[in-house]
Length: 595
Ligand SMILES: *[C@@H]1O[C@H](CO)[C@@H](O)[C@H](O)[C@H]1NC(C)=O
Ligand SMILES: *[C@@H]1O[C@H](CO)[C@@H](O)[C@H](O)[C@H]1NC(C)=O
Ligand SMILES: *[C@@H]1O[C@H](CO)[C@@H](O)[C@H](O)[C@H]1NC(C)=O
Ligand SMILES: *[C@@H]1O[C@H](CO)[C@@H](O)[C@H](O)[C@H]1NC(C)=O
Ligand SMILES: *[C@@H]1O[C@H](CO)[C@@H](O)[C@H](O)[C@H]1NC(C)=O
Ligand SMILES: *[C@@H]1O[C@H](CO)[C@@H](O)[C@H](O)[C@H]1NC(C)=O
Image 1 (tube, rainbow, N blue to C red):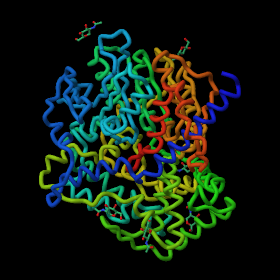
Image 2: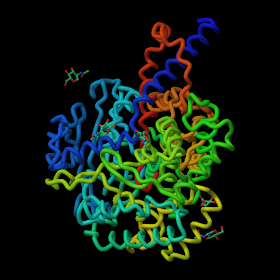
Image 3: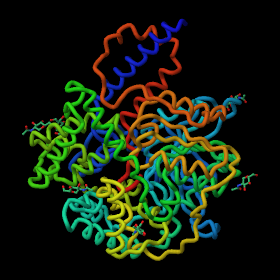
Image 4: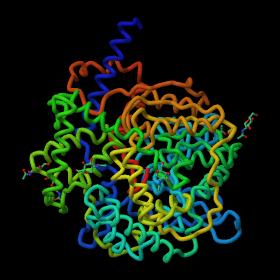
């Protein structure tokens, strides 16, 4: 092709991509993963005999007997599920066992084919996130990116969701819900909402730590990242292999770095994406996550201004005016919160809720910025419904059949991992206050971040003999680290720091706002990731990948009509294009209190 033809083709791809993205975003509901939760809740409530396909219903994790050999069972229409038996305590492997829940998207090539490349394990972050949930819902897109030669494996880390023993601080679902749904629950509260917000949150953190200790059945001490790294090695070995292939997001970067440092000779391919500073995490500091948050927020503000009144519902001619309008809403909500009644629930939109909705939107600009802009516009007209819907959770209904909830994802496991992993912190209010004051100097988002450490303030005194660093190794294959240029919770600086510890590793940068590469649509990034898995090639150090569009959609779709023909030569990339767009518009690897 001539240069002009290539440029024309590239332009057309951009236009199509933009159209796609817009189309996808326009039928977006605010919280895609929550939809699934809603579905579960609806299915299980007594009064609602509703209408979900038998497929999901028929599969029960309890029907799988955990085994030391991998035995796959059909589940969720085109997936396979398994429960792998591993030691609960690796220093006493013949005693009690744990069972790791796993799900698989099978490679397209048969396992006896010379093209088959083995399993890639996925961790979506948290800690506390369920790999089973993510591969069940997004496994097809992940498989498209890494390629059909691989199995894509999601697993629930020990203690979490469907892996047993599960961590639970509460004696019943309703006890947990009553605690978590209180409007001034520590995870919903901005520490800047009122003078007593921080002391109240501290007190609640103490209670969570106490509950964790009092209701421990003896397994709590084994729920940590060290043991999960050992479980990953077991999963690899159960596949008849020696070395790990892995793609971990967010907290999954801490898990990946831990594996690489503990088992440097067992690394075949290891991608960590949205990289946290493991040292800071194991010190229970959580103090250098918010370095770039202001940049992500700036992408909302500047993007909205640039998009114009047609492209952004909360448009102002300048960034200064737009920010002033946000501050006005904060002040107005402080003075007068807005009662909201939807047809499914009700609640109060207040300062804390607005802070938390904005902060969470920063994780996924392509899924959330246009929705957030709309919600802020309505809010400045006194209507809180749209903002409320962005944080709405399915109405809680007590299930009749509690066994249906035996494997539901709850937040307790994530707290257990981070408090067990982290060095013991001084639990006094004075110390918590000083930490908050330190954080407030570093970031204007300290108010929504502070709750993360609080459950560790009165954490039970369990032994701390697990691996806690250093994160340095000459691995059997170099690591690939991926970071965006404006990640709200895992800044690029952390990727650069962690990379220094791992010989030969490379940091690939994606020029977009948002958390982890897949929060933004980049063919360039995902091709590098695919080539790394498939061919073992790493990008040149310093490589920066562009994304194919901005979070606020442009309205120029003129040339899309005859685009199909032009796109034909890019058939291979087209699937990739669809996968990256689908991931970006549904990206929600975000867990109550975590990364
Ligand atoms: C792979 O396995 C399938 C089914 O077990 C068998 O039909 C096929 O011949 C095998 N192919 C090779 C290359 O061994
Ligand atoms: C709630 O209202 C929305 C739009 O007004 C509608 O689409 C939805 O079906 C309603 N849900 C229920 C449970 O009535
Ligand atoms: C508030 O906004 C929602 C859309 O988000 C709309 O359906 C509703 O009618 C509005 N309420 C009022 C009182 O204007
Ligand atoms: C607050 O910052 C000071 C100065 O950097 C440091 O010495 C102190 O340990 C910090 N306090 C807490 C609780 O993190
Ligand atoms: C806390 O709220 C006050 C009053 O609205 C505001 O001036 C200040 O910037 C806020 N601080 C943070 C960290 O949000
Ligand atoms: C990695 O290898 C280099 C060169 O052989 C050696 O100097 C270094 O100590 C090794 N690092 C680790 C963590 O083993």
